[in-house]
Length: 278
Image (cartoon, rainbow, N blue to C red; front, side, top):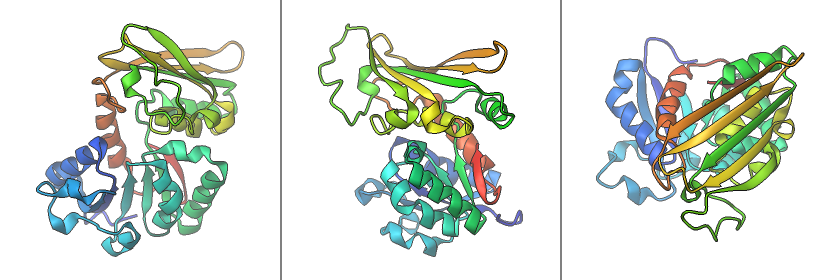
């Protein structure tokens, strides 16, 4: 954990919409909340020209340790988590913005072991998940019996690895694209189901194989994404929440999730050697 007498140095890996938002927030508001930018990396560095000062740009991600970050935030792709996650944790706390990568059980275990070995924290942001801490407490107490999450979006908002949406047309309405375990779902829509992955982390007793998910294409959802969570406990206990997250057409991430990510980052001050939902 960094000393409270200095700012936490943040490395940002990825410069899409979310990465740009975080970099701008750190540069503009970071000094007020004890954060400073250590580096930003992107697969295509041309995106930085005229926008980010050269001193902050990291050309080779393998050289991340030279920037001495306290926290590294990944906001680009699960492949980066797989390739660099353990290395990141060997030097810094690591906030995984693509928790769908954790559906790979071997990678999940390797990251947990690395966090423990290096006494670093693997942070998992809640994103668009509502009630994550409550789910985690229910799971930790042994009372969580079932968890189901449905994410509904306009078809232009999905980025799928399988060709199941190429034939969509405006006005077709609602279409269920996939239903099954979150472990099965994450490889199909790795950029769309990070909320489900965060829920699977919260529901540790059930895990990625035990948590059930469904993704729905709906051409009526032009202004927002819908996230429904159904929690089942003992003796007939149930909770059903519905969150409408404002989003533009084609947007993978809802607008409210940006602020949620920023709030999660503010929590990342070191919780040593474990996985922490933030």
